[in-house]
Image 1 (cartoon, rainbow, N blue to C red):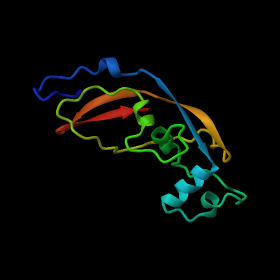
Image 2: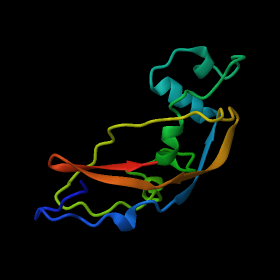
Image 3: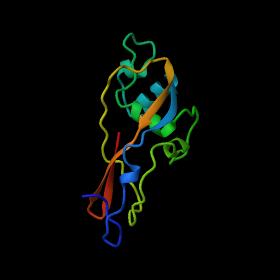
Image 4: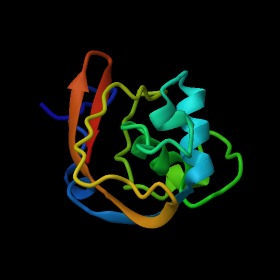
Length: 137
Protein backbone atom coordinates (compact mmCIF):
# COMPACT_ATOMS: atom_id res chain seq x y z
CA UNK A 1 0.00 0.00 0.00
CA UNK A 2 1.16 3.51 -0.77
CA UNK A 3 1.00 6.58 1.49
CA UNK A 4 -2.41 7.92 2.45
CA UNK A 5 -3.49 11.52 2.95
CA UNK A 6 -5.45 12.82 5.95
CA UNK A 7 -8.66 12.29 4.01
CA UNK A 8 -7.87 8.58 3.58
CA UNK A 9 -7.19 8.94 -0.12
CA UNK A 10 -3.90 7.74 -1.61
CA UNK A 11 -1.15 10.35 -2.05
CA UNK A 12 0.35 10.28 -5.55
CA UNK A 13 4.02 9.42 -5.08
CA UNK A 14 4.92 7.98 -8.49
CA UNK A 15 6.44 11.23 -9.78
CA UNK A 16 8.98 11.16 -6.93
CA UNK A 17 10.19 7.60 -7.46
CA UNK A 18 13.37 6.49 -9.21
CA UNK A 19 14.71 9.96 -10.03
CA UNK A 20 18.44 9.95 -9.34
CA UNK A 21 20.01 13.03 -7.78
CA UNK A 22 23.72 13.75 -7.52
CA UNK A 23 25.35 15.56 -4.65
CA UNK A 24 28.97 16.65 -4.24
CA UNK A 25 30.41 15.37 -0.98
CA UNK A 26 33.89 15.55 0.51
CA UNK A 27 35.77 14.42 3.58
CA UNK A 28 39.29 14.47 4.92
CA UNK A 29 41.34 12.46 7.38
CA UNK A 30 40.27 14.72 10.25
CA UNK A 31 36.61 13.93 9.48
CA UNK A 32 37.33 10.19 9.74
CA UNK A 33 39.08 10.63 13.09
CA UNK A 34 36.43 12.91 14.60
CA UNK A 35 33.65 10.56 13.52
CA UNK A 36 35.30 7.50 15.06
CA UNK A 37 36.03 9.26 18.35
CA UNK A 38 32.57 10.87 18.34
CA UNK A 39 30.79 7.52 18.22
CA UNK A 40 32.93 6.22 21.08
CA UNK A 41 35.30 4.03 19.11
CA UNK A 42 38.59 3.19 20.86
CA UNK A 43 40.15 0.94 18.22
CA UNK A 44 43.45 2.42 16.93
CA UNK A 45 42.61 1.24 13.40
CA UNK A 46 39.90 3.95 13.32
CA UNK A 47 41.17 6.54 15.84
CA UNK A 48 44.91 6.80 15.17
CA UNK A 49 45.95 8.01 11.74
CA UNK A 50 49.42 6.44 11.98
CA UNK A 51 48.09 2.94 12.67
CA UNK A 52 49.31 0.63 9.89
CA UNK A 53 45.70 -0.48 9.30
CA UNK A 54 44.10 2.98 9.58
CA UNK A 55 40.69 3.02 7.87
CA UNK A 56 37.37 4.82 7.84
CA UNK A 57 34.90 3.41 10.36
CA UNK A 58 32.47 1.25 8.32
CA UNK A 59 29.42 3.47 8.99
CA UNK A 60 31.19 6.75 8.15
CA UNK A 61 29.70 7.05 4.62
CA UNK A 62 26.26 7.74 6.17
CA UNK A 63 27.57 11.13 7.31
CA UNK A 64 28.35 12.28 3.77
CA UNK A 65 24.70 12.90 2.89
CA UNK A 66 24.36 15.15 5.94
CA UNK A 67 27.59 17.15 5.63
CA UNK A 68 27.93 17.35 1.86
CA UNK A 69 31.20 19.00 0.87
CA UNK A 70 31.24 21.37 3.87
CA UNK A 71 34.36 21.26 6.02
CA UNK A 72 32.82 23.17 8.94
CA UNK A 73 30.09 22.50 11.49
CA UNK A 74 26.70 22.32 9.76
CA UNK A 75 23.20 22.97 11.07
CA UNK A 76 20.51 20.28 11.13
CA UNK A 77 18.87 19.83 8.79
CA UNK A 78 21.82 20.87 6.68
CA UNK A 79 21.88 22.46 3.24
CA UNK A 80 23.39 19.20 1.96
CA UNK A 81 20.33 17.26 3.11
CA UNK A 82 18.14 19.47 0.91
CA UNK A 83 20.20 18.46 -2.14
CA UNK A 84 18.99 14.85 -1.97
CA UNK A 85 16.01 13.49 -3.87
CA UNK A 86 12.77 15.44 -3.35
CA UNK A 87 10.27 13.75 -1.06
CA UNK A 88 6.55 13.52 -1.81
CA UNK A 89 4.14 15.59 0.28
CA UNK A 90 2.85 13.40 3.09
CA UNK A 91 -0.20 15.12 4.62
CA UNK A 92 -0.48 14.55 8.35
CA UNK A 93 3.13 13.45 8.74
CA UNK A 94 4.81 16.10 10.90
CA UNK A 95 8.25 14.66 11.61
CA UNK A 96 10.59 12.11 10.12
CA UNK A 97 12.41 9.28 11.81
CA UNK A 98 15.54 7.82 10.28
CA UNK A 99 14.82 4.22 11.12
CA UNK A 100 17.16 1.98 9.17
CA UNK A 101 20.33 2.02 7.08
CA UNK A 102 22.02 -0.65 5.01
CA UNK A 103 25.61 -0.22 3.85
CA UNK A 104 27.37 -2.35 1.29
CA UNK A 105 31.12 -1.77 1.22
CA UNK A 106 32.27 -2.02 -2.38
CA UNK A 107 35.67 -0.36 -1.93
CA UNK A 108 37.39 1.16 1.08
CA UNK A 109 37.31 4.95 1.44
CA UNK A 110 40.62 6.69 0.79
CA UNK A 111 42.03 7.51 4.24
CA UNK A 112 43.51 10.75 2.95
CA UNK A 113 40.06 12.06 2.02
CA UNK A 114 38.29 12.58 -1.26
CA UNK A 115 35.71 14.53 -3.22
CA UNK A 116 32.93 12.22 -4.36
CA UNK A 117 29.51 12.26 -6.00
CA UNK A 118 26.73 10.78 -3.87
CA UNK A 119 23.86 9.40 -5.95
CA UNK A 120 20.48 8.74 -4.34
CA UNK A 121 16.82 8.26 -5.21
CA UNK A 122 13.47 7.51 -3.58
CA UNK A 123 12.44 3.93 -4.35
CA UNK A 124 9.30 3.54 -2.26
CA UNK A 125 6.74 5.29 -0.06
CA UNK A 126 4.61 3.15 2.26
CA UNK A 127 1.85 3.75 4.79
CA UNK A 128 3.01 2.89 8.34
CA UNK A 129 0.43 3.35 11.07
CA UNK A 130 -0.30 7.08 11.32
CA UNK A 131 2.83 7.90 9.30
CA UNK A 132 4.75 6.69 6.31
CA UNK A 133 8.15 5.22 5.52
CA UNK A 134 10.21 6.53 2.65
CA UNK A 135 12.81 4.16 1.16
CA UNK A 136 15.86 5.70 -0.45
CA UNK A 137 18.98 4.23 -1.99
